[in-house]
Length: 155
Image 1 (cartoon, helix red, strand yellow):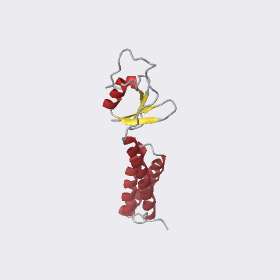
Image 2 (cartoon, rainbow, N blue to C red):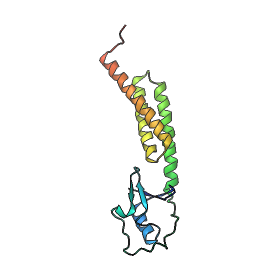
Image 3 (tube, rainbow, N blue to C red):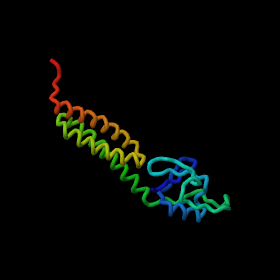
């Protein structure tokens, strides 16, 4: 799992593996009281994360305030944005194909997956696409069930 270092102003640096976080500890860039956030958005103090090796006597004044940005951050944000757009596109397509019941459900299912991936990248647009596709998927499943059971509207 990879982690982001969350600064007091909310700025995030990473993602970084445990090995890279331990390297930052040796370089005095990471302190036990720093907040870490995993890829799923769960936060914890660095001192509580198993696998990090803090020295007993860590000088506070030698710790710089800036962390190096990991190269993967740009790619993670870019792919999260792409997944958010995919989720929205599949949401709209599933609405447009709501009369082709099976296609609606399939498109919404892929949109849910893309929206979920973009939410892992903390993309707000992905949350909208995810929600849209959840609703479309539910209506698609309901349409399939009603069609298969032969239900017709009362006259």
